[in-house]
Image: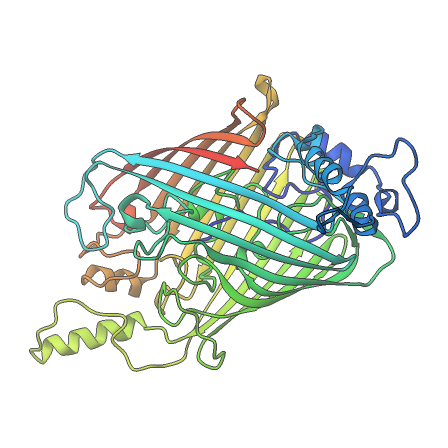
Length: 534
């Protein structure tokens, strides 16, 4: 599970790329603001002995500097007091609650100059489905009886900008409640926020903890707007970006500004990520690793090395890279196909090394045991001697801005399909496409409408394993009448005029052949979402 939306680290200006957290709202205003060159020195903290000019706005860096330089007064009772603390704290609060046109989608104002970052998100998704047709069901089937579910994810984002080329990010998160059928039975599952292991604790956990270092390779710079995962506002056009620590790989790979954020866009995890990319992660979607990214104005290449879980869909990572690890490579090209419109083409290749089972071997072992008269009923992908196996695959990710309000995207994915699905979902071949449209056409520029279509498949050995009653960590109907899993999802996202930073959404998904099984479904899953951006 990737509990949060992703943010692009490639250094594109906001006029070029919508990073998901702003989700397209007021894109025209943001683009106009981002296109203007900024002078960070105008907002720099004053040096020792230097005061602000009359009429200068008290930004947070100035406030912090003045607090550090203010004299400490000892009161009659012996306590120490800084006479400037109260007015400066009030100034900090006033700055957080004073908004401009760029703060329409957040409850608090977030400084573009302070060395500190503090924000939070709350995401609630409620879904249901009516009873649907099923010839039979198994241990991991999507429940064919009517059901409802509510999931939640709360994230606290913190960060510190050490200098112009170094930053530190630490995020805490809590997720819980449940998804429909405990996130089982559909490979293109309907809720990216749902936890796949209901036995995990709902207590807060560390989601991200990384150090970022930028190595400049050019003297020309791009102005960037801050977001929860990137505080550096001035980046070299040509550079090397290094991230080390705890992360989720979709923060850096397979990013797509139209379909990558379950909090403001699509909810289905075969739309927000490439399901054929079995990216390294624990059950919650996080891992430890290093990402090295070379960026130029029109292209970039990146490499990521990450830890794999000790077992399929496991919550424990293997710290010995000789026993398990993941290699990820991505090349990105940003040509200008349509004048002044953003285009991106990304090619992904990955290799997973872990103690994975092989579908063909599991089937052969099962058939041999049956022939020998042993009391076995179904094949078991986990029943094998420990062995370091390789699973590899490819992904293609494309997006095109058509107009200021209309964007298109598409993904292709494939993996070798001989080794068991390990960390993300059970999918060996993927195709999707879709678009989003801002509500300018009907007089609501802060609204967003999106639609996407998905067609997924699995390998012949994977099908055979499921048809014999084998269980994956998501699928297992006890049998299978194979058909490609097909999904149509549409959402409508809108601000709720109670307060800034509050958004609602209506969503509907149609799933044909859930679990790649023609004997079950189709199923319709309507849903609603409440999102708070603090």
